[in-house]
Length: 70
Image (tube, rainbow, N blue to C red; front, side, top):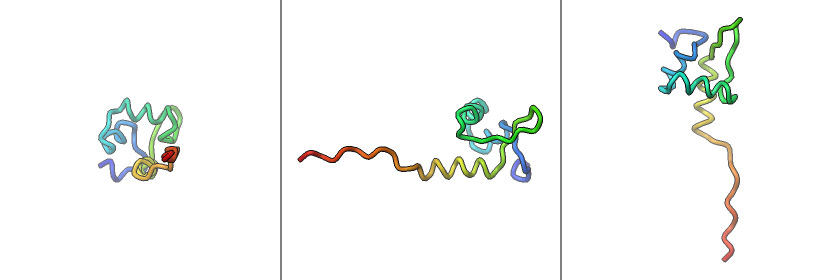
């Protein structure tokens, strides 16, 4: 089972995140997911997936809207 593995393939990560494989590769390319490279293989740790999801749950404070000029 994928939950027992130390490293996950992008395909395994996609199943866990319930997104497409292409989305996982796009997240890797954009830097949102940081993979581990072993030779030519690309793997993701479960901790990295959890970090990504936690960041989605608590986004950093973005730009504040200007105060109303009343």
